[in-house]
Length: 325
Length: 257
Image (cartoon, rainbow over all chains, first blue to last red; front, side, top):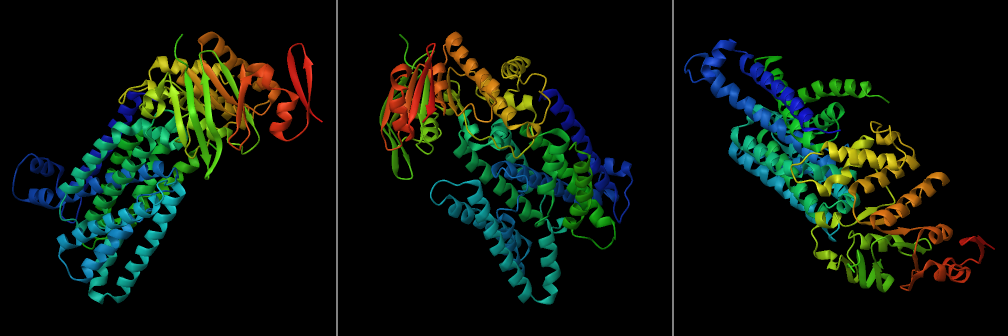
């Protein structure tokens, strides 16, 4: 029996986890900062170690949290939209489009703002192509949408590979880091955080309708859900959330697929709880992974996308094996 | 006299450019039970989904309580009619009680969660179809018949005055077939619900319905009281196979020759 009380308790627990991930991200690093100094910096004391916290670590942690949250939210929405547990935010080619844009910008030697801009434009381009083709005759079934998305993603992958092949040596590292996902390149923390807030604000009022949609389009419609409008809204919302995240931090894999599943295994498939819980868990996971990425072999940094997978896979397999058969 | 729960006016239903139902005028009032019979692919389910508002009619109109159904907001329409589909697919896990509770959706506000009263209604519906004590079971562990009865319980939880049932007896054993038909007959008798059901057994249609609608699949339909319309002659034509009629204490039975 779903209840508000249970949802509230679980969300409180996950909030604590998110706070803990921030605490770790702010104190740990190649430059050690004591927890007391972190607190002092957060409450407005300037100078010294505080600058590292306020100007480097906090913005990066906030951007990481926002991207993780966006990806997990987009993944949960895509899984409902396609009624397929294997769907993730990248399955419909959004990240492929962004990748093409970003690779092109890096190839041209554009600055960060140009890379972000072209990546976002690429993501939107892929979104409209997939929607336009899948919508074709007015009835877009899950299979048609999924197939169109997968093919567009494959096309984008080929373009990306082409650009990697012709790129000069000194640009390759930057391109690979972008493709694997890396928070070091994010210039701004507030756009993804704002996008996360707006996306959640738009998704939550429809959470119970999403529960019905996950059970089947006809059943949902018979129970009074305006299915066509709702599916269009989720498609746009999930695509824009993915685009916002990919533009900020490249295509960080795994968070969008596995976090909604982790939360589903632990709490059930009620979207009213699943959506906010996925946001908190996805955000916390990415902040933790990013902290590890910049400390494990410091001063060198790893792409965070590699670590999200390395953390996520064993946790997921553990939870799956514990499920009653 | 109140308006009929369901009415169609010159309704046409199309499948792939081919009219399977044409110029159908129908009305179902409170407490009435209507059976829809026809061959496979004749368009029974499609007709039912048009009545349920899941497909637009090719021509004509469907009316609920005298209002054009196309103009009624979907949630409002879901309070007036409930539809049982043929297939339930569940890509994600869910418990039996949660599934039954989905029927309460049209009754709840946007931010509402299901109350204990909603849970009581759902438990009552589960009990009515013989699924009591299984509230916590995961739906993918249910048998086909149990899954079908859960779908019926979800429908009862929705508590609409009009039930549109697409092959409600599929996957059910004899005992539960009779129980489900008795259940809807009782709902029609005691609560004044209207029931429209697609059935494959003319004998059960004769026993549990007031009227029958025969769908021939070429646009032609024929509707009337079961006593007049469910005869060996009409059914032989409908199914394209010779049937013989046996009468026993007011009940009819049809045997293939």
